[in-house]
Structures are given as structure tokens and as C-alpha cells.
Amino acid sequence: MTEQPKYRLKVGLATCGIAGGAAKVYRALEEKLEGSSIPLERTGCIGMCYNEPLVEVIEADGQSYLYGNLEPEDSTRIVEQHIGEGKPVTELLVLGRGSETDDPSYFSRQKRILLKNSGHIDPEEIDSYIAADGYEGLKRALTSMTPEEVIAEIESSGLRGRGGAGFPTHLKWSLTRKAEGEQKYIVCNADEGDPGAFMDRSILEGDTHSVLEGMLIAGFAIGASVGYVYIRAEYPLAIRRLQIAIRQAEERGLLGENILGSGFKFEVFIREGAGAFVCGEETALLMSIEGKRGMPRFRPPFPAEKGLFGCPTSINNVETFANVPRILHQGAAAYSSLGTAESKGTKVFALAGKIKRGGLIEIPMGTTINEIVFDIGGGISTGKPFKAVQTGGPSGGCIPADLGDTPVDYESLKKIGAIMGSGGLLVMDEETCMVDVARYFLTFTREESCGKCTFCRTGTNQMLKILEGITEGEGREEDVDTLIEMAEKIKAGSLCGLGQTAPNPVLTTIKYFRDEYDAHVREKYCPAKKCKALIDYTIIEDACTGCTVCARQCPVDAISGAKKEPHLIDQDACIRCGLCTNSCKFDAITVTSMPKGEDELCHR
Image (cartoon, rainbow, N blue to C red; front, side, top):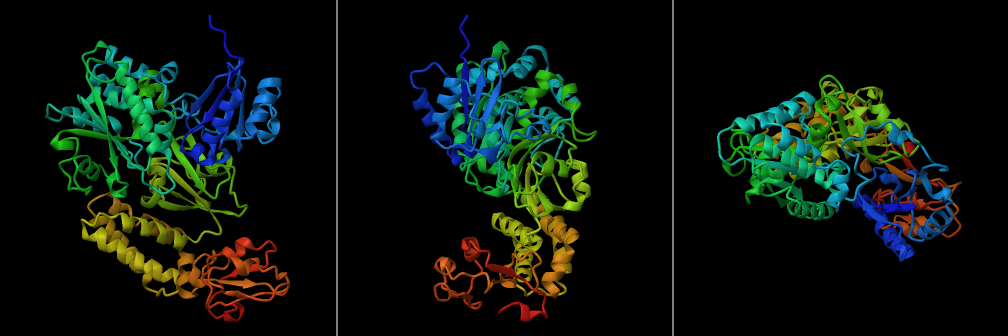
């Protein structure tokens, strides 16, 4: 029997870790461990993106120590002190015995089913996935179940599509299976385009084989022999790991002809998208795979009847496919025991914005917004009051803090005018202008519109012009009612989901933050002090030391004054970039936005 090593080291090498410097830490550990028998392994996103780079030291008895926020030189202390002397470097620990910053609630409040392998297995080694019960769901499907029984198992689990709409997965599979046609296709939608969303990318980078296994099971269930992964080219690491996983699965006989001796054959191809947000819509995605311009088409016929290359096609997103092997392996009952009556299982979210613990989390459906923000996310990073969360990206809605007890599930979010979307959750504090948030998201959807239908192409552009006017102090009394009227018409008249949901951020911010719109329109005042046309930067004479730093930072030379004397800002020249406030060490520069009629306080 091979003796187990006394220690094992794992480094989080997903995109988030690499961006934080994990590759340099990995190379430094390689050098320190050269010639030793200590295994150094790569893994995917551990979830604690706010602590990257992360290194886990696992002792022979299973005791784990997670080090975070590391620099390459920290590898010396970890190897010499922890590995060499058996003494953990407590001041570098973020989780584990002796950690001064240990807060187990980050993981204890989660239920990691999809992410159970992320941060634990090596995504570039198929044996690592197999050792974690990988391909057991496929084995069960191919050796002891009929396609109809697989679909029934998915139906019993209550799995709904995790791409945003929440359409029942079993129904999509069943419709495609019953459709006429010798050739059928499985398509994995990995075109993750929501700002602030990185769930699909992280799953593909950290547990790649789970997505392939889910596609294989789906292919068996609907009678497909070919699958496509449609992924945006901006995800080079995910693409590379997909290529590795496909090659490894083929070498093991898990892709190709006569898989596991069952007679079932299946092959997978990768198609890279150019990053068009509209290609997240399933018919536009299919057009892009076919080599055409990605534009939605009228439905019916739906893809289940006439999809890719005119053949019956079932399309699910990354997270949906990654759920399938767990359901087949552990049984539908285990999965359906989590969540709510109508929203079963768990949901992966990308926590971003003004949150202390930004990263990747997985929670049971029905967990409240407050539990996510405060118990898991650790609260607001700025120390300012919690104001709102944005769910569902440009297609979603802004939910105010006073609705923080709302459960996160399909039905509850729909009731308050929001949607779950693919899983981005952007947290905002009181210094966020909700009118400007609506303007930002509408700018995104306007630019990403394919232009095929008038409601979306022209309507979003006209709504954006109104919002821009409001944030620039040129709003009119009738503007808000006009926005509501246009939003409803765009939702009703647009061809695809992009146009149908583009007005959501505008409608929800008007519904829950109407007072901010009124302040912008009636008083030419931005309560959050964010809209550049409605704010002034002012130097407090008694606090200014005349250090000249702000003047040197100003890109338009709007700040003047002699050294060691109070400075002044020329309001006509100032472009409100904020560089002066960021550079001032004495808090001598204030941002003001006063209601109309108090111009004597505006220092113009």
C-alpha cells in the first residue's frame, strides 16, 4: 500500500485566482517543494474570491488549513513553518484551526452540490473527477435506465433551467425526445454575458467533466448523438479545460462510440462566440453555431421541434447540466428535498458589488436576500447602509433593502418584479444612485440589441435618452410616466428575451425608488451624489493643507492654489472625475448635491 503523504497543497487556479496572482504563488511553491514528495495540485475556484490567491494545506488526518491573500514570498513561510515544522502560519490563515479571521458562516450557510468539487478536484485530471464519484450518474443511466426513466427522474427532482426563465428541464427534454427526426442535438449555453456574473465560467473551470457528463445523460435521454458547447471567446481558461476534458473523456471511452458498452454514441464540439449578449437567447445562439449572424427568430417552431440545422434540439445552460449527474447519482429525492415547493435544489450566485465577501456561493432555493448579503456575504464592504441588490443582470430588477426578507426563488422574485436570471447578484449601498443604475443597464442592453425588431432597437434607445436627460439635470415632469409607458410597450412588442426584459431595471427602480427620480427631475438633485451634472467638488478651506496632491492629480487643471495654502476648484473646468477626492489624505474635499433653490450652498 502506498504511504499517504504527510501534507498535500492545493492552489486555486481559476480565472479569479490567476488574476489575483495565484499563478505566481504556484510557481513559488513549486520551487520551494522541488525535490520533495509533497504533492502540489491545481484546483478551480474555491469560492472565496475576496481572499485570492488561496492555498490549501491538507494534513494526513484530513485537517485543512486555507491560506489567503498571499504573495509569492509567503510560500517560503508556508513551506518552512507549516510543512517543515508543523506549525501553521496563523496570520496568513483565512480558514482553519488557529485562524484569526476564520468565519465558518461563509460555507456553513451554503449547500454545495454543484460546487462540491470546485476547489477540491483537479479540473484537468479526469481521474480526480472520477475519484469524486464522477461519471457514476452516466453509468446508472446507461446501464440500468431507459431514456424515459431518466427524464422521469429529472421530473421527480424538480430541476428547472438555471439560465433565467426556470423552464422545467424534464419538459424540454421530453418535447425534444418526442419530436420527429433522426438527428437530434444537445446544446450547452455557456454564453454568460451578464455584467458581474461568473457562475458558468467558474463551474467550467473548476468541475469541467460535470458539464460533459450532464450533456451525455441529456443526449441519452432525448436520443441525441451530438452536443455543442457554445462559449464566449473571452473565457480562454474555460475553453482550454473543456478541450482537455473532451480529449480525456474520449480516451477513456466516455465520449465517442459505444459508451460503456451500451451502444450509445455521443460526441461534443466547442463553438466560440464573439461575446454578443443577444446570443444568450437560444434561437440567436443556434444561428451563431450555424455560422450565421446571431439574431433571434420567431417561435414557434421551438428548438425542441426545429432547432440546430433544422433538427430537434434541447438547450440548457452550464449550471443545469452540472446538476444532472448529481441527480442521477444521488437520486431525485435527495435533490428535491432542498429548496421550496416550486423551486427545488440549490442556486449558484456570483456575489459582487459593495459586499465584503465577494465570490461564488451556492445556497438552497428559498434563502433570503438578507441571509445572502449579511450571513454569507458579511455585509456591506463600505460600512454604509445596505440599499439594494440587482438580480438577473440587465434583464433583472433592483430590489430594495426593505424587501431583504424576500426568499430567493423563481416565484418570490417574480412577485416583486425581479427575476433570478443566471445568478449574478450585485449589492449596492446608499451611495448608489438608482437612476444611474437604470441608465447603466439600459446602456448595456441598447448596445447589445441585435436591432432586428423596432421595439427593442428604437425603444431602448429612446428610453436611454430620457434617462440620460434625467441624470444630467434636464428631466421633465412627464419623463417618468413616459418611461413606464414605453417600458410596457417594449416588453410586449419585442421579439426575444433581451427586449422583453430590458426595461426591468428601469421599472423596478421607478417602483421602489420613485423619490430619487423625483429628486432628479423636480429639484435637479442627486441624493446619492453620483450624477456628475448634479454635483460639485468643493475644497474645505480649514482642512486643506496646500499639499498640492489634488492639483497634480487633476487631469484638466481645475484646481489652483499656492503650496501650503488652501486650494480652490474651478467648477466650470471641473469634470467631476473624483481623482481629487481619492488622492486627498486629509478629507478636505467634499461632494455636494443640493436641491434647486439652495444654490448658495453649491459653491458654483
